[in-house]
Length: 194
Image (cartoon, rainbow, N blue to C red; front, top):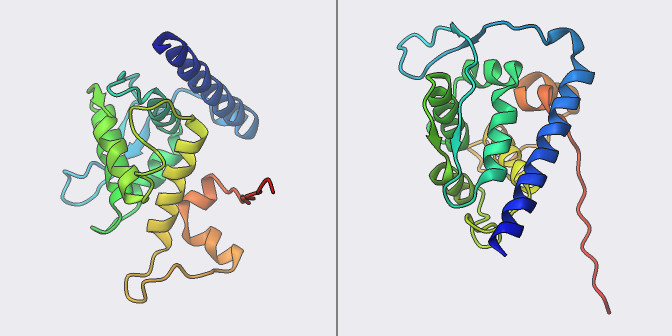
């Protein structure tokens, strides 16, 4: 049973990775040159962009989080995403953004990262701990949805009013690096068999 779950997890992670690579190739074909990219490390006092080369780094699959590791590897390979993420000046309430910066900072330093504790934090922040149990077989797309939704919540949350303002799409696009890179609109439907 464990082998079957592992195979399913690997196949779904591979599928997500292939889809992201195809999206990259077809959406930005001229940007696939081997280039260095700018990243500001949280340790630098002036938040200067430091140009580094993206290293291939392994991630530890502790607690069967291969679906999350696939997402991280796909996002890590997105130069624009890393640039926008590290250029963004976060506040202490934007915990998911801080977590992603910490993970990617370690990866950029060539360190192998155990990501299960980070996933647990993100799932807890998103309020999904009851439905999304780390260590159980999960779908990479569902996990990506939780991560992106949490980032969007953090980018659009107004701590003074405690609400998420509804913005005009053009204004929203200009102010939000996630929408600029990954705009998606979804709809959920719940049906009952009565």
